[in-house]
Image 1: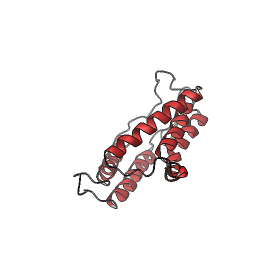
Image 2: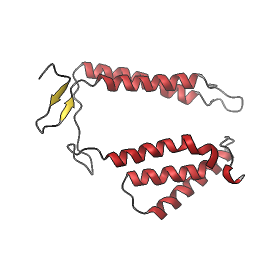
Image 3: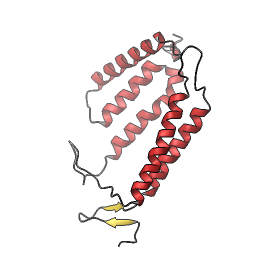
Image 4: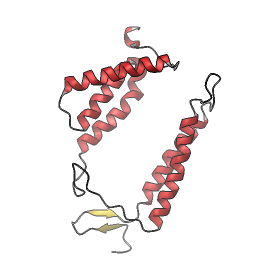
Length: 171
């Protein structure tokens, strides 16, 4: 079916033949980053780099990459699943792992203000480790806590305001 939006592969898996939605999604995410970055200062008094500069640069780069992706799709680039180190291209994504990774990305949005960076980093680390198949909970908690504590101290030493160490305890 050459005019169908989906092509049937030899192994029976349907693949989108021209996923323009993907280019549109990358451009939309870039637009959101660019809009958010332009709302923040691009430079600061103490350092030449302001909090909005990297977000603005990232958003601009995503828009450019989305346009390039759209051009590639229009030229007929095929997006086929590829074999990886631990998986074949015909395997389906694990929805549980995907949801755990998504939860790990969302945890800071809801917890960092109330729990602080160390606990939030620990929660995110444990969820990502679970998504990648780790079953050693204690090691994941200890590793995540150490990384979170180290990140909080390093960012604080650099003068960045990350909030209290443990806001829920008043520390």
